[in-house]
Image (cartoon, rainbow, N blue to C red; front, side):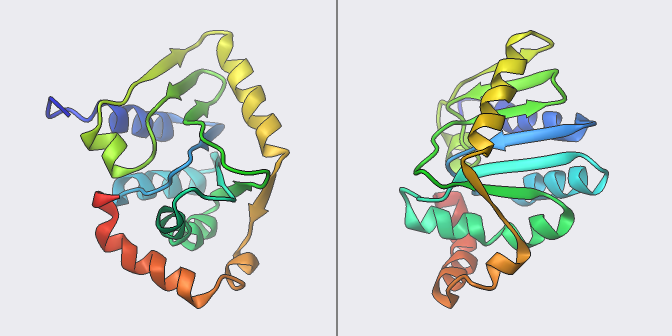
Length: 172
């Protein structure tokens, strides 16, 4: 936040834009802007396997409602969304193509990307990336995939909260 360069978002967007095979993301908070939404949807539409794991049991109800407000457009574009059912997942991980990974404290929300002094390790073409991806896959086994039909079961109140909170997203 002390400079005009948004390093975290730039790294995350670079990973998404340059992915060829896959981008796998695990984040406790999915409160994204249009640039991130567009990047994820475009990657999925061009054939990249985009998977996102978020908690099924949130610690912040409003953040969860806001995250869910993006599900329909992402799933329609081919992004696969999974919710970690045993509880709250707090990992902040990006992996891509077995070549790139970012692991740290950077959530996918406005405050982490622009306001806080967050940090992460960026890994490029090192063996540890395979172990990070193995952890993602192991976590995926404890998740339920969210499909379009599931969205119809969401309460009207939760959907309304999500849409209304989009206005306040930069403050969350």
